[in-house]
Length: 204
Image: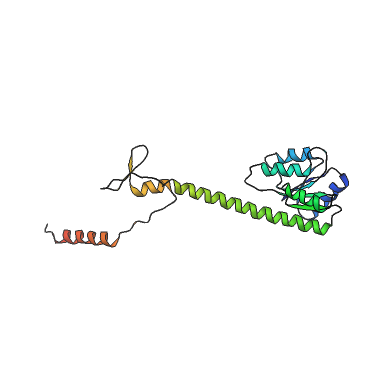
């Protein structure tokens, strides 16, 4: 997974890059908030982000707030890091929409665990989003057969929107994912047997 690091203090940024690389992540770095936001506006951008709270340009909580306002099929997971390590700061960061808050100086193992949580959450939310899209597609296909369908009371053909008549199974196949396996119900089977017996008994 690609992780965006937005940190203006070079030593911290380089440390984060090295740690994430060691943990198996692909890293994209930004030196300030404006650069970070430009990266997040690109078509293919990271969805797991680590943002410094105070940095030139757009600050971390503001970036998170903008991400929350953006309509996206794939969700974000945002971690804010800052030296403002107190309850008020943590509450403010989480209220802005951040998913986690890490104080500086951070413990490497704790940060690794928190990033791993972000990775798992992102994977779960992405899978959920994909399932919702699949369900929406199924419901759209079902809706194609909703409403009043004109059907002949004698031959059972169905009339489409172009006023053309089609066999029932052909119409349903074209408007759904259904497939047909033809057979005969007991009543029709008996009627057909009667016809066959009558034909055999009729003198030629």
